[in-house]
Image (cartoon, rainbow, N blue to C red; front, side, top):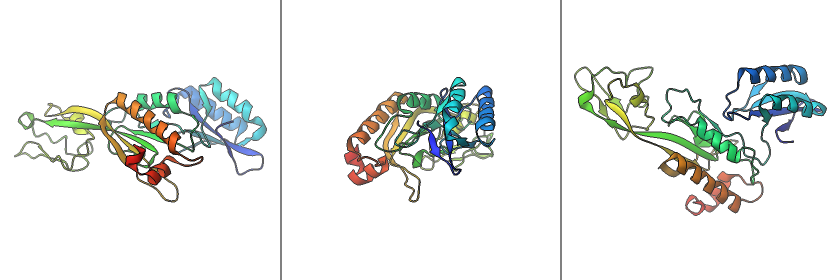
Length: 273
């Protein structure tokens, strides 16, 4: 059974689970109650959140795993991926103020397509709603990062300073505004998070276009690797097409047990693409 990991205690395992809906680490209050009951009944009364937003229930007796899984399934939870399977595709929370584009629904769709799918080796996919990349999209096998191209109309600026002041102002000093001068935009410093367009009260700064950058070849472990830019500023529909092409290419080129970042390093990004 997938999602069963050897534990420290003799005859004990760790049960990794994810939510069937909505696939992005959002759990209902009922699911939380069931997790608490399963941890108390079968485990050691604790659960652990993994870096990929799955939940692990440790210290489950191996002979009781199927019984525990049945209880979880009735609450819309399922055994998560392990081994040579695609891990939980995860994303920023849909309510984060910094989202250039909310990516939770895109994560749901990618999970429906690839969650738990067999691959040459473990495969990780992460989505970030802005360039701050809190969900580690630059250190995943496939990373998707939302970006915004903004438009600045200095004549509309009322010099309120919301776009530059803490805690909601520009984090990379790409904007400057003062009592004497309306907003000035430094295009070179801008990372395309688009948050300034969300807080401007007079539409002096607006979102001109929204899109996604796609990265491949990132990884953690003993020797962390930063993913490399594959496609820049594509649409949501193109994200699904490009991820499908990356997965197909990975399956075509990889040796058994070879991670995607290893394939990219071995054949080169241009050849991989």
